[in-house]
Image (cartoon, rainbow, N blue to C red; front, side):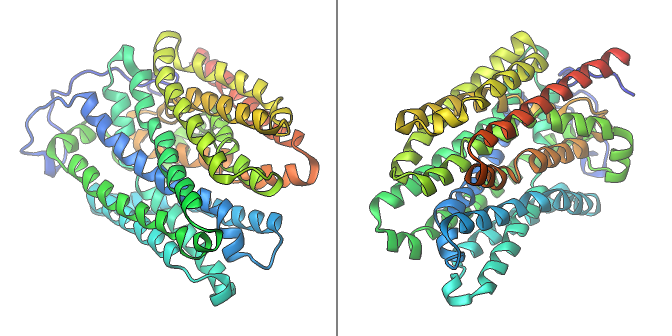
Length: 447
């Protein structure tokens, strides 16, 4: 196996040899600055996360009343979270299908189909009739469209995050790794801001009848803009040259799993603390306040926006910290801090407005610091031939194991057994990350 550095990639030597493949025959040798690649990564990730958080927030504020009016508020929210998780189940399937499309046709065609599919599913959700009009077919349609969103997200992998990691200066890998992660807090701020505005300006009836649909139309428009922006980057000869030169092309999932299965598993588990925390400071507290507190949802969303601003600072700081102390040390230290934070979940969430605000602000800061380097766990340790497919599958697995069912499980545990079980849930993710990082270190020493 090719020697690699844990949670980092090969050095960033300038590309000076012509790429392989017919489309690159006439491409001159070129060097693309990491900053140029970062633009494509940030644009792509921000648009995807905005779409993600629009659906996530609607799962709490809208869908229980609109699609599950026959159930009480808790059951309706749990049903909504069950459908929310379907996207993460479909995502790895979508990855495999769209990888096959890319092998058969091209990266550009794959990305166009995937983003068109994502936008279509999103805008169709906005137009869905409610349960009162369609009955069970409204729920079935929502579930199918959510599966479509997940499959489409699997097809949006363009290889630019891996390309960014490979071309970043050796002493700036942590800094460039965090750039794409900025999409998460930015996407949340925009989505939460739109919903907070709608809740403030509209009556409850207007919001549930038509107001909630507006953010989904906005998400569709952003997907269209992102499609053209990303195609403008990945379809140029210079980028195609770099992607081919770095062997960032899809290969058989069976082959990747056979040759790099251990790396996929370690990469997914190493970031589990961050992925578990992801929904426990965004979606879960929103549902808890909606069900068990009289606090204004617009005010709470505003506090979460403040937390997301802190998360942006945490993401940026993670790049500096990782470059100074190492990405593995950064991930390990943050996993320990998340484990400690887990013990305060009941005290803070039951501590009134001050306690809840502290939970949100501290939680978002920890999320930014940890999630800022989570992509290192995704792109690490793969031989160049398997990095494109391996990184995508590792990301899919991390989301599926760490985040897919987090809102459903956390709310179910908290409602039936108490918030202490949410602490245990988050603690288990932190311990899994520490175990994976330790295993990775032992494998490195052995090799």
